[in-house]
Amino acid sequence: MRGRLLRAWRAGAVAARGLAELGAPRGKPPWRVLFFGTDDFAAESLRALEAARTPREEPLIDRLEVVTLPSPLPRGLPVKNCAKQFQLPTHDWPDTGPSGQFDVGVVASFGRLLSEDLILQFPYGVLNVHPSYLPRWRGPAPIVHTVLHGDTVTGVTIMQIKPKRFDVGPIIKQEKFAVPSQCTAKELEAILSKLGANMLISVLKNLPESLKNKREQPNEGVTFAPKVTVATSCIKWEEQTPDQILRLQLAIGATLPLQTLWMGNTVKLLDFVEVYNIRSFADQLLNEHGIVPGSVLYHKSSQTLVVRCKEGWVGVKTVILKRKLTAADFYNGYLHPWFQQNSKMLHGDCRFHTLKLTTAKKTERKGNGGAQYKTKST
Image (cartoon, rainbow, N blue to C red):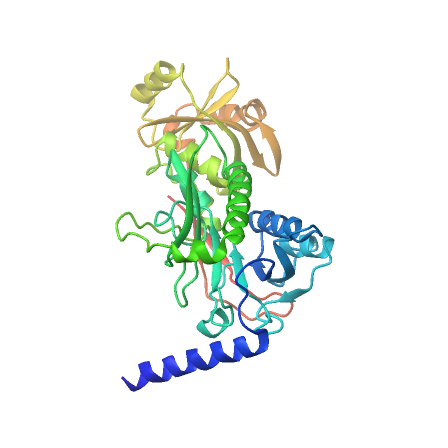
């Protein structure tokens, strides 16, 4: 009881302090907005907010500042670059700039939990532009998991942030979107980012009314979209079907090329294709030579490497092994010589092995910190 009273008192004190600094919350636009974001998806919402700030008879945004994450990358994060282009005041997290001077916060692809004290600084709370039809795919990688699991329908949700947990707050606005066939995650991100930016502006035009009509998320249909790691790119030939491998390529191939092991060397596979007219060719070899998951054959007429996986075959057009190779190059340089030298061995011995990455303990080294990776094959 004492703990609850203390939290309630603290919340009231923070809210009162914020209102004292800001003055009474505005009942209509233009709004003072603090934006939190990092990537291309978030940058689209920031561009929409900047466009709504452009001098006009009735501007929607009066003041706009940005909070983003520090980045070691030379090219910087998309949101920071966008803010620099628009000459917006920018703060590197955990710095959030002047407290109590904004009407509403907006979060898109930020990846950090906002504290209760910070949320309470905004009279209208903090809005989150989330690229899924919540409660499906809560978490940091909703678009990737939409593609990875073959969802035919997704959407964008504008919700209100709650402290301590991601993506559980009430829904303010929500729209569905049919996922195009063979759409990559990057392509879907571009589509949903524009949809989300338009929805955000629509909510801000009628913010008090939109918040009055918010609704809690249903308890049914909750799924979680965990962060994608390098290990996600390792193909599991024994466990994944052709459809699953093709969806994995669509989901992460643009940023994390799929990986496997070839004769103890890590290789990357690109340009996956469905295979149709080779089943009798492959199945005949399967019966005669004991092919196992990961076994590699070359289909000459289509110039495609065909690889055995769970319940079928998948085609590969490009291999990166020291350098980029076409399927024909890989066959001529590696497959054909192997078969000539090992003519009495089974085809199943000539195969891709599943690459497994395990994170070793971090070691302290001069000029080289961080996790070390070990590999093993199956």
